[in-house]
Image (cartoon, rainbow, N blue to C red; front, side, top):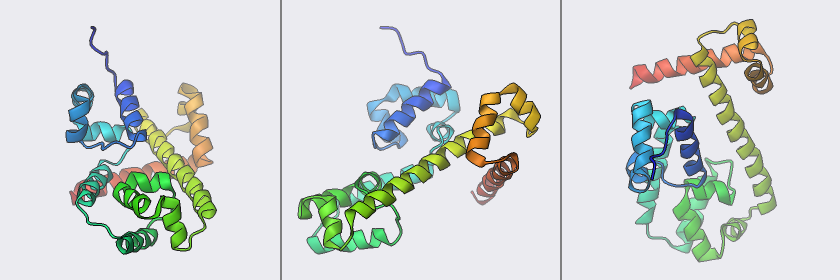
Length: 207
């Protein structure tokens, strides 16, 4: 059987597909089930973390979620504890939809289903209108997707090594249209790219 022919695009595509499946994206975990992907990512990007970053994902957040999941596996739940933890989560998360909570707090969602029948029923026990929860969840998901795509556009622009709008419009007209679609005007494009670069420098200084 012929070996898979990897490319940066194929690696990023595979990473995003795994991410959409809500699997643990830490290097050690993915290596157990897809060592070829981890190996290819390391060859093409230098490290698994760098490949995750190239895919537009936050690896520090991925590791944090993974650590939370490991801790929650050994937690002892009670009905009161479930409700208490839901209230604590609701104070810091706008999106309380089942899909989002299952991604970030899988053990809590599982415990809620176990004690109350479903995540929906657990929220309703606390007085939440689940139809409203769904609407807010959709809005927050759209915001996250938009922010993620805006980040990818800025990463591509950064690699072009020019902020000359006329030059970019000439070389990549479709890309130029997407930039204006997501940032409204060129001034905002430049502003957000400078902000991205500044944040990167601050992270490097603080690391």
